[in-house]
Image 1 (cartoon, each protein chain N blue to C red):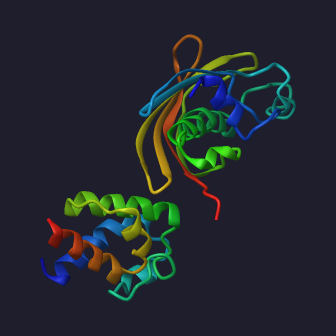
Image 2 (image 1 turned 45 degrees about the vertical axis):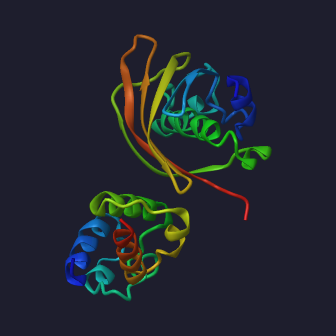
Length: 147
Length: 84
């Protein structure tokens, strides 16, 4: 499965798509990037006159790359992928270490802890362009199957 | 392993995922994991993986779907242990 095929199956669109590129993907881990545009919608209010990427958006970015892209890859031989993939995040436990400002490019690295009974749990980290750790934690999601 | 020993092990396993402490205090073989202990369905996966590790067994999809009460969990563990 090519990186572009995975991107095409993502169920997101702007302004809530936070994946630019998949750099590498295996059954065990994924590495991808996103650059926060200067005009992302949330900078207008987070914060007043002082734009910083919200933690929920960093978490969402980690989930889109680390859980959803990897989940699509892991389900590549499954009929589910005839429809846009649907993965519901079911837990997040993330620590935030550094701010991410408009225009910054981040790299997300996610390593699978397990994928059982349709639940994918990963240890995920995000690094900035200086290779500094921005945030890290564990995320899990359930891949929904059609009833 | 006696039933009581298995219950003790199960209590330790489910404790971190229980959302109803009263139901947990009253936990018996009849307790429903989702309704009485209010373990959410996503965390039920973690309970099952912890059971696999504790008892050194593998639980398949079919058994997982039957694991709704403490008793059904104990039955499945006993079945898997006896197959070894």
